[in-house]
Image (tube, rainbow, N blue to C red; front, side):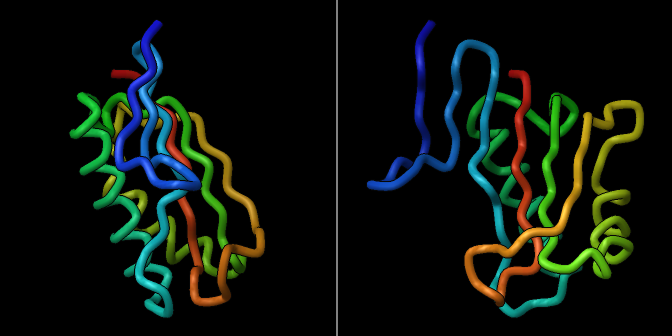
Amino acid sequence: MSIERFHTGPRMSQAVVHGDTVYLAGQVGEPGASVADQTKKCLEQVDALLAECGSSKEHILQAIIWLADMNDFAEMNSVWDAWVPQGHTPARACGEAKLATPEYKVEFIITAAK
């Protein structure tokens, strides 16, 4: 099977397609913005990368979400719930983790089918 990489840098690619599966790198929002605004930015980036790879949010298989603080769970979910297509909700996990910098409050890691 072929492997196609998108937006490849020296450390990572933003997306990798292997066969009919799309793997996205962790998507983060604007540092220092609110959890809701960071979540919106992450999901906009997810939409754009999936489209570029020939997929869409209706084809997401799994979403892994890291929050810097689980107290932000409801705020993140309010944006997620408005974005995720009902009837096409993916398998999902959400946990608390230290992110790359303290200014990041949420990170999304997505796997999708084409």
